[in-house]
Length: 158
Image 1 (cartoon, rainbow, N blue to C red):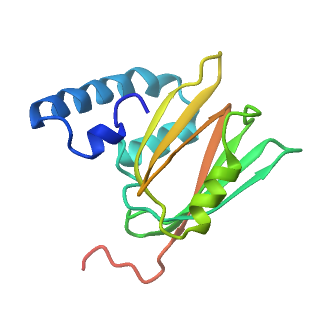
Image 2: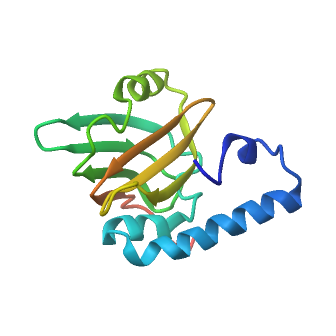
């Protein structure tokens, strides 16, 4: 995480400093968006860093032969009940599955903020998620898609 760090989330910075950091983050996003894979761009636009805020982590799975990593979470984005984030063309060794599974197994891990970024090489992207009460997850990949399960009883008029 370059901008929405643990210190930023914990309120270590003054309101003015935090505002400057968030402004720099939004500027960085604007630079990234045109080059992002379409699915990743759409996901980022949903939340601008806070779309996953409070979302419990449900599961993580990596299929090594296909290079696909799937993260399931429950975002607070009505009418979404569940989101499956699918990272394709994952860079080997760019994430710690054992640590993430440990955090998920504890049952208390929730997302605080997420940040997209360039992944260091051409056509490689990075997605970082700051977790609470502890931890951070980052993954490098080439393509991204997400699927959502919607609440069939949701009524936007309510």
